[in-house]
Image (cartoon, rainbow, N blue to C red):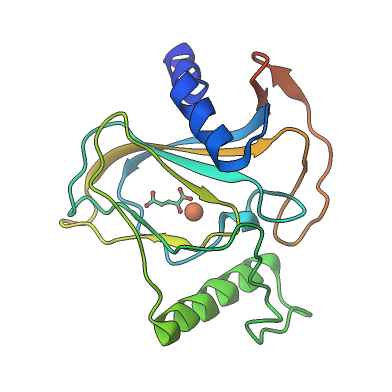
Amino acid sequence: MHDTLRALITSAPIYESLRQLDDEEHYTIHQTLIFISSQATQPHLDSWSMDTVPHGFAHTLWIPLEDMDYLAGVPGVIPWPVGKLLTEAELGLATADFSFRARHDRHYEALTKKLLAEGAEMYTSFMRRGDFLAWASTTPHFSFPSNPFPRRRLSLQILIRPTRYEWGTFVDQPGPPEPAERMSDRFDFIVR
Ligand SMILES: O=C(O)CCC(=O)C(=O)O
Ligand SMILES: [Fe+2]
């Protein structure tokens, strides 16, 4: 299982697609998550958990491990300029005296209101095994509801950055250095 997942995540189609997005040579994989069921996430930026320095150059890969129709609770993505960070200041949010968790929650609540006020477009797809979605760390996204809820929906989420960028988060720029395992001349893995 371990080797199979590593082979999938570091496969040539994934590498070539990442290169089409940013023309980088080498990538570091920070996190691999398996989602067993639909997630029901609110609109948010993955930057809060993982990003680059500067913001916006990390990728989230979302890989369905089974075919998914429109009732499966698939992710929806808001088209977003690369490198644009929607800050708390731009959303009119104070940051002093709030915990990390409170700042995160206030950010997604204000983001959701802004997207509704602007009538933002959102993109998704029917997804088959072999497809995948990719969005940037600063790109707003969410989960469509599933019917029924929750519903089995096997998928992988991968947080990955071009290796030549330092890693950080929404609030911490830069983050601490981390040990990485060289997988190939294309990919490193963060091992914790
Ligand atoms: O699995 C989903 O519905 C989206 C989860 C999510 O926000 C993510 O993978 O970053
Ligand atoms: Fe996310």
